Length: 195
Figure 1 (cartoon, one colour):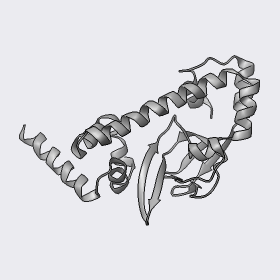
Figure 2 (tube, rainbow, N blue to C red; figure 1 turned 90 degrees about the vertical axis):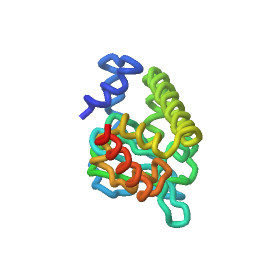
Figure 3 (cartoon, one colour; figure 1 turned 60 degrees about the vertical axis):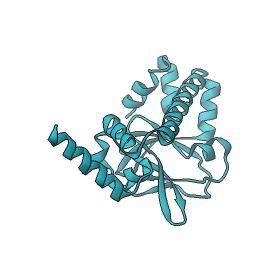
């Protein structure tokens, strides 16, 4: 149950056996069905999720249109971070795209871990730094890349998600319409067959 979590955090810190026990005890295991909303707009996010299996989607609702902000996969931590860290109402939704197996930690348990296992502070800082870099890359792509270039980068880095995530959600994440994404895919497929 904890093997992927340990593999993920070992990129940042090493826990001794006693620290591992304290770390594991802070989490609870939860199975969640597909299309389940973990955080709703206006709700305060009180939990942080580590994804053992499945996909989560963070999205915004703008006048009834769902705009995907991020797709979280196995081995990642997920939450409505702004709401979780500030304990303020969420401006986003967080939902499952597949049946999920999650390791769940509440904010008070995380703060207790900071006290009892100080190395966790380093781990969360490193993860926050990665999130910041990812956010900068996404923003840069929206400012500098064409929709076709954004799609090609997505395929290059996340090709398996094309088989796991509905295409209208991927289109939303890339900031294009499903029709535009379909045209881009056809054009790229045609160009590949011609070369």
